[in-house]
Length: 95
Image (cartoon, rainbow, N blue to C red; front, side, top):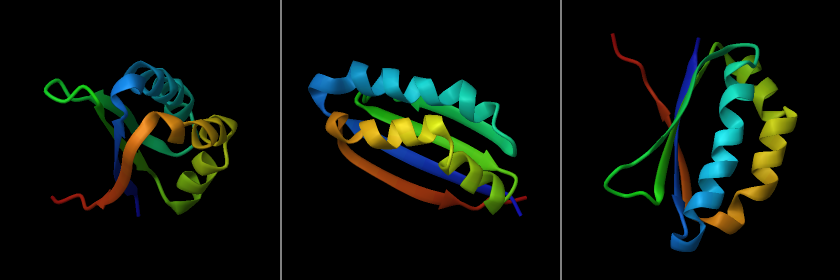
């Protein structure tokens, strides 16, 4: 069964560009990861401090592979100083 998640980051006002740059480093390596079905990052137009990541993986093994990758470990070790909030929601696909 595929796994789809929505992760929301709210940057500190003074760190919007730093967080944006860090998140952008995740896109291509994640999209090229085995089992990645979808990986996109959006910056909200009306709230430019807010970034939404939508990611979908073939299965738990693919998600675990992503979470053990070098690019994920780099992001994980560096995002906190730039964020005011971060939260994640699993999504159910209907249809």
